[in-house]
Image: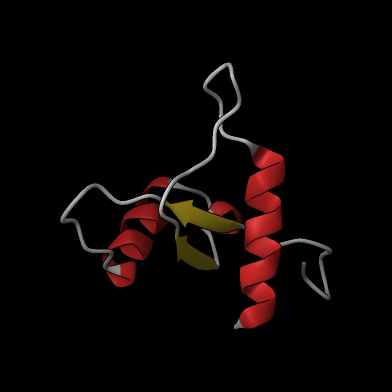
Amino acid sequence: PDVRFGEHVVALVQLRDGALLDRDDVHQYLRCHLAGYKVPRQLFEVATVHRSPSGKPDYRWAADVAAERTLLE
């Protein structure tokens, strides 16, 4: 949720085994490849990204997790 715009962009990231999340590197990469309004304001690491039976990301689950974690920070 966002007070001004209603919602803002966040990213849920599932890392490969042994990988580390460098938020600054991810942010720089995304700034070069996406329009500014599409760059996530926050990155959250999750153990597993839930998917629907068709293999697509479960957006309801993602929205719930993002909202919960945003409130905790």
